[in-house]
Length: 612
Image (tube, rainbow, N blue to C red; front, side):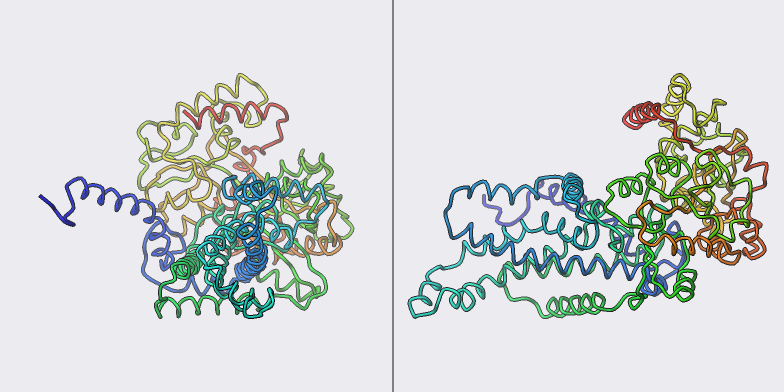
């Protein structure tokens, strides 16, 4: 008996499975969009609807500069890909020649090769030819991985086109060029436009290849957002991500509609026009300080400086300050090692300063031009990573300890032992950082977190493997959100982020265990090839002014080594022991040092722990 279109029982289960799969894939996106309207600064709890994060995001000069850069890169990439891809499609679709199959294979490669390989290969190539990293290098890399999509789409369009129309135009006396522009190109136009929109979307969203090939002045929006996530996801990130999502979806749907050759709905035309108009407006608006003749390029962690300070410095010295961001010390090192960038000022952590000195990648600081150096606390100076502070100036300091919910934890939190307590299974979060996790285990065993003993490192790995079944997640970015939501009751985390969470929920407390924690100093340093070292020294001296250092504490939530700044620091920050801990707590914290060749054993055991 024929059932017609009535679904069978197995068909219903298949439909349900499909719905569940799509729900799993798109639920995080829906949550991101919803929480972009959350009144709370942090994302763990809903505190009512608001549009203020959209307003703040579009008043954020750094975000707008990154968006403008992304749009300009995507526009340049799209134009080049449309021209090159269309010509390549015509050549391969209309002509036979030796090596055609090889050329076709070349166009398939960027689609099948992982992006990280394309990014690494690109930066190696640029290094070999001495091509400076910047706007042109990013566009060139984007063209390399995007042009194939134009070739595929236009060639598909070409294969369905009636060649007799072009032949008829020639028979009627039209020269080949006229026939191409009057007949062939209009017929190919929907495919070219669809491919161009696809390329624009791919370029706009790219992070991996851009992170390899970007230089000073070229921080795109995805790179900035990823960097910002390292210091905590906020509704501002959600707001910008939502806008980027809407733009991407509209362009993708419009590209699909153009390829289908069906009538495009009026609503989609209107949405597409609005998106394209918005893109043009943002893309051609001049950035901050566009009229300045000198630019100070600063390579720094995200959310680690103040727009107010930047504007005041630009006004004082009649220059433009360009802020570029990175997400790890290792990313900073890799970018400097290429020798293809020209940053004026960087902010490496203490152990990385030592590595940069050995690699001869930073230059000595002319102390005569830093009149405010005397404002610094002597206990933060003359550290082993830079004796005499010849190459670096302390900027902020960070402590790693335990953040916990005192309304959930009944016993005192005094030792690293509590992170191994089975009573808190699946309520514990650890940093996704090999040295920090080993540091906790080593200190629990009474060893130095910079141990160079194979036996001590192996024993610490055993502790971490034993602990893993209790750990909910390894997370270096959103552990504060886990505390706020109650998903985690105990987290290994950084004092500044825990302090921000504590402002939202007073039940959250930060403590440095009795065995000691990690103490880090982020420093200001000048790269060896900095084009404006004198201006960089002026900026260093400027941020060491008491009021400027106090502003940095207010914005970042991390303490400053600047003693003269304390009278200007907001009272709630100064009185917070998570930000300004007592001297006895600082003294029992240890700096992470470069442990040399034994670092390979840390990485080996860490891989074993994470893959069990």
